Length: 102
Image (tube, rainbow, N blue to C red; front, side, top):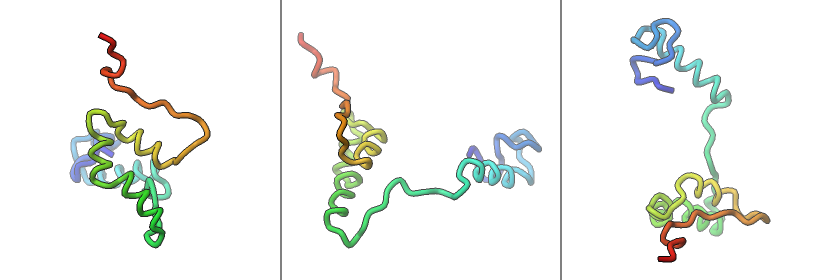
């Protein structure tokens, strides 16, 4: 929201220099973007072992290292894993080493 606790960059009162209305302006902008408040990107059932294993496969330490490592797909990969298997094949990013024939 570009509000650092003292100044809101898009404040209509001070233009981001800092005033008593900055916090209110930042809150109004947040409510416009997230009218129902923040939502989780995923939920898992703690009493379902399969669901917990799926959570570990997406958000576990090793999974996150791979996802955000040199060959990983970052947040797009996490979103794809959360959507689950689909009937359509998904394109996987390949490294330049796989395409190098020299």
